Length: 408
Ligand code: AMP
Ligand code: MG
Image (cartoon, rainbow, N blue to C red; front, side, top):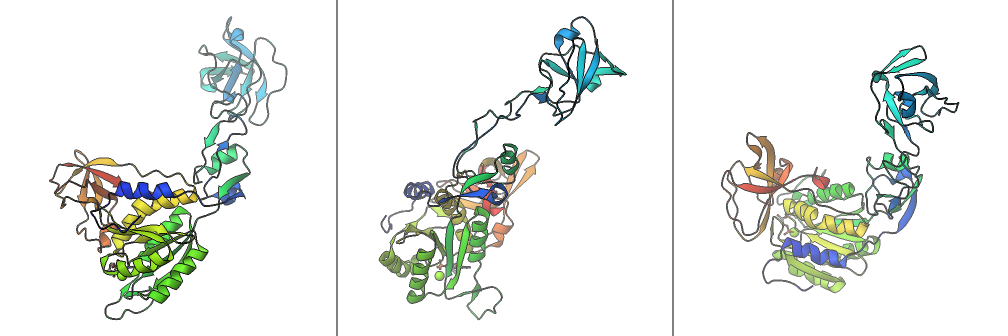
């Protein structure tokens, strides 16, 4: 992992290079189910029971034996089965059992006939159609077999998984502790929101983006604020982050102007590679190891910081946190306006997807300057333009990646 000045590193190589080195670093703890929302499963969840746990009725109607209907269309109602109150009486020949949705079907039931296909005259029930064997019976284990893996390790628990786990009677789950991520912004020009700006100052916006994305990922964030371009203060911040967190993410200070300075400090403290990525926005990027923590140095330009976090840091953090990670789907769309592009880097342009008369079309949000943050907030997708591609004409097909996950 040297200081690479020769050529630009493709995104996929950078990602692979990082992921190869990383492994989950978060211990396991046991939590009550409601407290585990947002956490990552440490183990596969095998179903402790069959779902449904007993054969039951999918309809309000009548449980029947086909043999009883072979010689006629009328049966006498022997009794009733409700959800939670199985029918336990005798079931003589020539009889049926009134049954409600979710009630266990009495032993011997061949089918449930929905109420709408019957006529009742007191307890004398006429069946208007010949039932098919097994109809309207939800069989034991037809949803989930006992012992089947319902959720693999690495699943992040969302509102979609909570009722599933509850339906299996899972009261506590083994989950990973959250990844602890220290962050700071670097730059003498940066001021925190809520303070006045002097000439030459700007507000530190990156930290708010990075914090928000970490929150979306379920990481615990140690926010060390803004560190000026001062070796002593930077060094202290690096050391503190390394002692207290699993990961340090900084923004700024990794581009050519400052890289030598940061590099010197980081070379002394750890083993960090400074990369020039073949992506736009987001060329400068640093990755490596401090004595204890992993380090990600994002570019200072706000859009570059967000895009490199989304594309590179997110999968890396997921791996450290033990979380399975899949990139959002990429789709094809028609360029509804020309797109500027020069060959050489993989572009993540900010686009607006919409439904056009001939299918899904995409427009640019305008300036693609990596300092123009409004272009990201107006967008609902990346327009992913291949490295060697040039200018895109109206009507050409382009790859788009709708914002999901972190950016929505
Ligand atoms: P740097 O990577 O430090 O050379 O910064 C590149 C550009 O991004 C400069 O215009 C910086 O002022 C700007 N920048 C760096 N950090 C931040 C930040 N935290 N928030 C907003 N802009 C930033
Ligand atoms: Mg700077």
